[in-house]
Image 1 (spheres, helix red, strand yellow):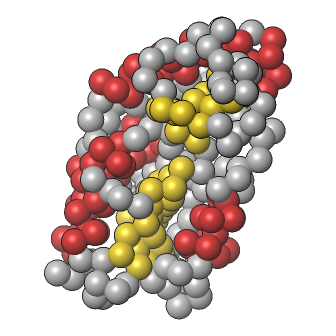
Image 2: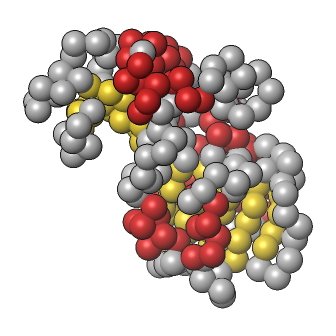
Length: 229
């Protein structure tokens, strides 16, 4: 591979978990103690807005206290040799803080907020959001997060990026969340795919390498053994 080759990473909760960020779906994860419809839906926000705001305010504070791990750093380091794009389901900013310059967040960003009426009014979130904090259209500010039942507006852009991949690397996600899971269908037929996960739900095949490792170990192995300098 050379500088012109395009590596596309698709990352999920597993890569951030190693930095100390709680996942949603695992045992004792964030959904274990919270009903999804209460804190991750428009309806839940309308019923108890401060409860929803407090949930994301707390998550934002926790994310600010953790650091990118080796997997994030190794992904960023590959920009010295390849064109690198990151598509992530994660709402944290660990990829950016590690140095990745081309990151697409499918499900929103925890460090941003937006109007509850017009999704185009987006702002940096530098302090906890409270009921009564308004956007410029006079609507209540809400987390810039894609809740259940809402459109994943960035999926078309993610598909376009995936269609140009020479190497597609999946890290720390089961690929069951749609429409993100359907990105595999957009990988070019002649591209190599690598799947790094502790519990992969696929087996190796043509153009598919499975590394049954956590994100940091899998990325270290990938860089040392499979990506030439």
